[in-house]
Length: 348
Ligand SMILES: O=C(O)CCC(=O)C(=O)O
Ligand SMILES: [Fe+2]
Image (cartoon, rainbow, N blue to C red; front, side, top):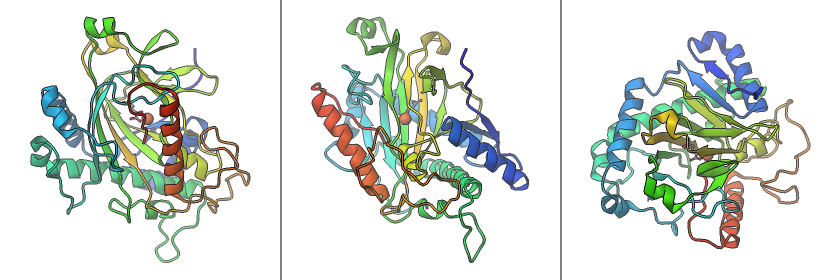
């Protein structure tokens, strides 16, 4: 039995319990890098249901229709459709690729042109925008609570705990968030015959990886996601009703000199636990503004020495958020090339 668990943090009435909630998040970030939030303000349950419904309507379209919106991997933009096997989160260990499909969209600002999106999403632009803004608001609350817990200086004029959140505005300078709809289709006998990537006698649907960015918010409708806990065993993330799952990306771990964990995670097939229905998840990936300094955070709690991160060795000099992302993208590209099979490798 694993002694690890994913903490659930209750946001109800959090302004009156600020220090307690901040402490709980801080501990989760230090110990495991994953936590659930319940009773948050936004998005509403109805908006979440609507988002899953839109995702389902899109993925149920015929493949010929979906591939009209195929993501262009030569572009820097993270936008559009990716079909099954087109990504490999773990190219060193995966041959076939991820058994998932996804549709990504960058920040839906008021002025963003979405003529290249499926009509379904164009027709629900305001719902999608409200949903992403709701996710973003909750992400900002997390950053504010962490600012407090890390004892970072409050804003001198307003006293707000915006040290981290001020570089993460919804439509901040050169930045973007990514809203990602994912579907892991139920595997048919033909899929089984076709083979799959395996590890520890499990069928791998999304290879093990750490996210690159600051924080990721996720909804899942069925089990499958697993986190590698420090004794090297995998912990299945339970599905908690109406909860948002938050995990930290490598950039946050780098920024805090390893104080916060960016945990390795993967998705495996657990067909019996989802009655052989498709698994759906929705990720919201939060990036800082371009050029945000990610060194020398003025927190008395952060170790002075940068550890030798597996993803970013000590001798690599990185100071800004975009340098960090570029470095990790380059490494993933190199891993993809050396593994000598088809398929994209890309984690955000
Ligand atoms: O679908 C999931 O549960 C997780 C997906 C994920 O880890 C990612 O897209 O980075
Ligand atoms: Fe991930």
